[in-house]
Image (cartoon, rainbow, N blue to C red; front, side):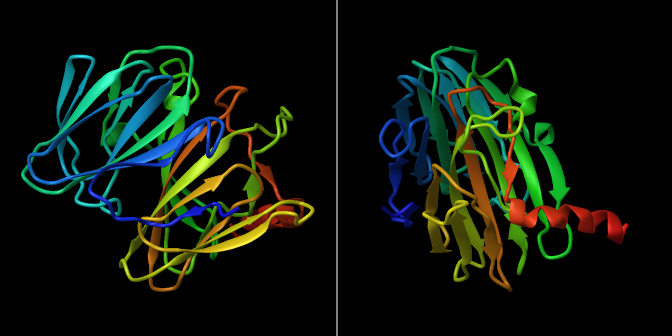
Length: 272
């Protein structure tokens, strides 16, 4: 099977990854609205996070309205504004500045119901990670900062710079083996700047029964049910990816690095 879902560039709401079908826990959809348009959705048995990729909007969740959300013109222009939507909720998104709006709707199967809340750009936890030619900027949207406020969902963004690798040294999180590894499915949604460029998504496991690579274009989605999953940005192009993770054993991130690459962790101290 292919783990790549190519960009279809459809207006309105598109469900791209279905929880319970494509993956056990994670879902992903994309909402694209024109000026002054609105769209209503329900979460059913999934908690969701609306990540505003570009534009400004009002979001109403079960009658509670959050106004004037969104501060960036595109995903490369700064931290996102996001809204947590509990299970069994109705919500409405209204475009708010007379321009195009793009919102990612990431979700996870859940049983516990919490209150809706907004994550402002200044509340996103940012880190620069890696050295040499595997450096990237990581934005934690709903990770440790949301413990006790959500059930399963984990959400963030990564910016890979031209010619750089990310999610590297390669790691995986497909086995429940605490304290060495946590089992969390994942979805990546990609943007590329400039749009004509590309990145590469690599997927493999220890015995190479999984051994895939995909050319990533702007607007593509990849599901990651198993294996190591590094990403490369082609020289001359930035690659962004939104990531959502969820699993059946909690939210703690415990990545397990490829044992063939562990020596790379010794390189950093030598350069300091």
